[in-house]
Image 1 (cartoon, one colour):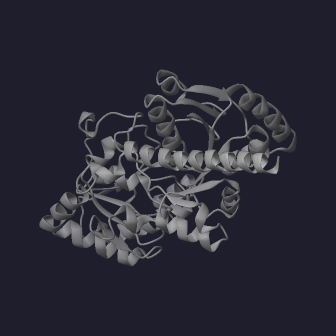
Image 2 (cartoon, rainbow, N blue to C red):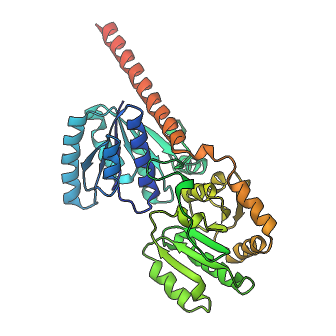
Image 3 (cartoon, rainbow, N blue to C red):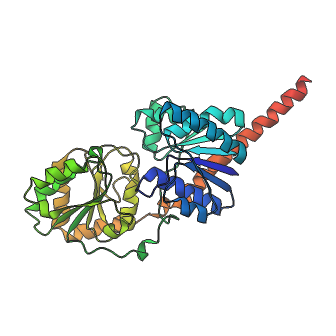
Length: 369
């Protein structure tokens, strides 16, 4: 097949949508498909080139003049590339691809990564809509996307072309016990809840340290909050890290306190690294933690319950070890290869349906004659 992926950029900034799209493009090219990516560029261009994936530069900023330019440039690209499948991973790409799909005769696939955004309903313009969890699929159906269009391909990035095997990373010398999160510095990621929970347990566990790995627009607000506490020397803002695995391998308890989360890709990486996990019981997170088998779930926006869960793990080494072991079970389903195989199956289903409809149309024409 000739497959074209549309994403906003291919920067190495920890964006899960970009990471999954880059994985798919590389693995599909490795499987002898002809693959191209349309984006505004970034560090992963070199990786795409290594896997013989063509990259076209295209800015998709939502300014009227730029959108017109993007539409004209996109039409040129697809006329040259002649894709069978266009796979859009973000809203602007779906709208752009939807404008030309009937003219240029390709089928359109979208993946819903962040269904909590209002614009996510526009992903339903595609012929098939891939949901990254059953929770996302159910939400999209409630929002009016026909069930016949929806397919669930659970997320996964383990053994990704983008990074080394987990055993090849050197753990960092963190202060132990180490509590870590890897997340964008946004309020919706529950960073305040985690900080408050840590403050509640810090006196009881004077050796414990909290590591906040990631960057984002709300970071300065979180830092100002921490500076007012007596535990500011034990709460570390590490910024974006291209190799968060080095933190995870040295972590005792990994926390994802999100208020909303379609899947929680970072949890699969924390599981692979052997962290005990506490996460919000919200959206797709329970699926990522095998419905409580691989991690402890707590209500979102509840710092007291989070603090209680942290206390139970930090005071009981046997329980802590047990949860670390449970996190590493049943990991094969989170491989990037499995995501690619199931995505290709969606493409193949569309191609089969398209070919069948073409045969029917030809028969109808012949009968008419």
